[in-house]
Length: 170
Image (cartoon, rainbow, N blue to C red; front, side):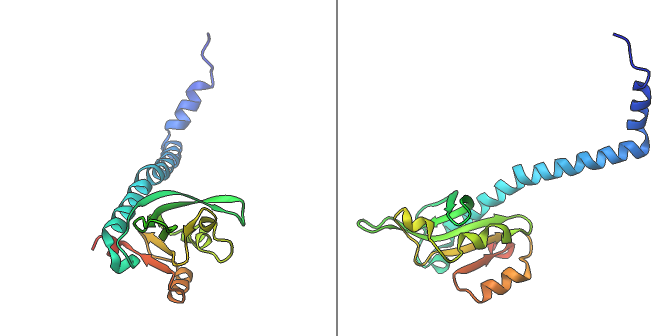
């Protein structure tokens, strides 16, 4: 197999300061996105679940039973919503399982995309599955500041609670 005469020019272009810098920048950006989504994000979600387990009755009205991650159906959009910290009350024989909180964790901003949908008025998807969701709170966990729209919404709605780094690491 014969080497292509254009190969050296491709290598030179790739290694030139301008070409190399552009490729390095793009590679760094891809690595950063991967690191945030596959390492930092899951770790932050685990920190949120740990905090919910240890927070006690002062936050959820009763001591949490199970705290898990999962998905809930979104019948309005015929899709599912990822929940990073679903907080359940301890089992009570003869009663539907109470869902104390559905929580979404974000390292950066971005709660507006899934959190308000999880608590939106309308059909309560978990009620269909025989869960008690009458007093379920939406908890937004954030590693960054909350946007002003979400802060305003939470201020006017006692079913939404915002948990930032100050509370998580207190």
